[in-house]
Length: 296
Image (cartoon, rainbow, N blue to C red; front, side, top):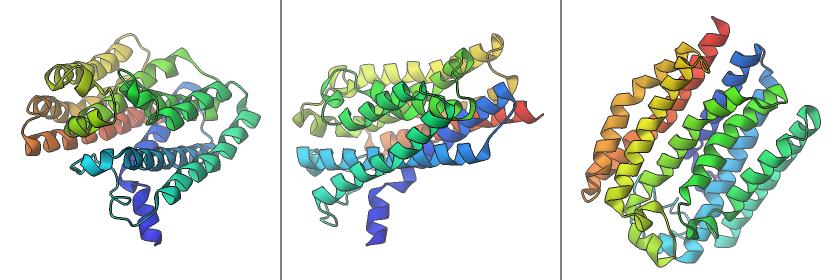
């Protein structure tokens, strides 16, 4: 039974939260010259709990809307399959989503008490992204911004704040690639689900723009990640070490090329795989770049 609950959390996706926490902490280390390892681990744990809440709440709402029953799963989309298989009841999955979110709340409160109340607005916006994403935001045009914000930019800024007790323009600029990458992670994963998502009244970009235009938009956003990183270095808003993130450029090209072959399922799945690699590795390498600049 524990294995079923573990799989419902979709552990294969939780690495993203660990990397986001790593990136935010390394930015703070580079900028301020110090690190509190305990704070880093606690903030990372809170982020993982929040991510589990996102995964389980999405699974619950997708099942209740009937979308899961109409979706042909891929390794990167289509939910956990736990509810479809009848291994857990919907109320249990909903409860898991609520409990993990409530477990993350004391961690947020702790950092507000020790580092300052300016963390509160960020946590409120992040919580709203979690709770409202599937039932509300997905039914408005361009819902992908919510993932980019709530599971990209805000976690980086939040873990940075946990270390420093403040925000900075450099940290804000440094978090933009995370917004774009996580936005694109969701965007490409939506391609196989277009027909099922339409039945639930969703307005993802592949539905509202069409797959061809969305592939172009996805590609432009992917290119923007590397342009942004280079710009940060050129304008001395980030250390030159962060250019090691360009090591993922080949995989980004393969993902972009595959996004235009959306009618070929195997090619699209390969593109989705490369996209996941780009999202995770680029952010990890960015964090490593900040870390190297901090210690060398």
